[in-house]
Length: 80
Image (cartoon, helix red, strand yellow):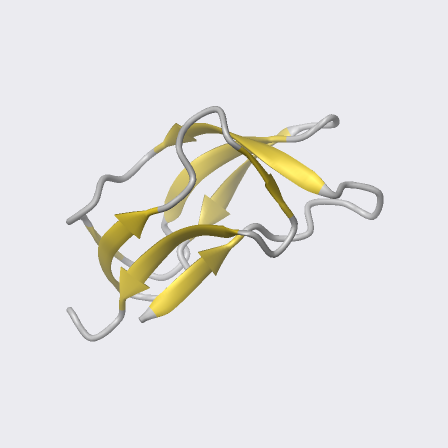
């Protein structure tokens, strides 16, 4: 199981807000495929998948503000 974490999106950025999920629970994803869009005070960014696998849980709903290194989703990397 691989945790998808909020990355550091800038030197002085401590959090981001989930704007849109581009995948659903059960979706097969590939490494570097965009999973969601996150907005910070400076920009909107796509967060890529860290691995190949199946999305098994979306933890952060649309509108949630998540700190850096906070949990966004989980991917089962054995499901490829």
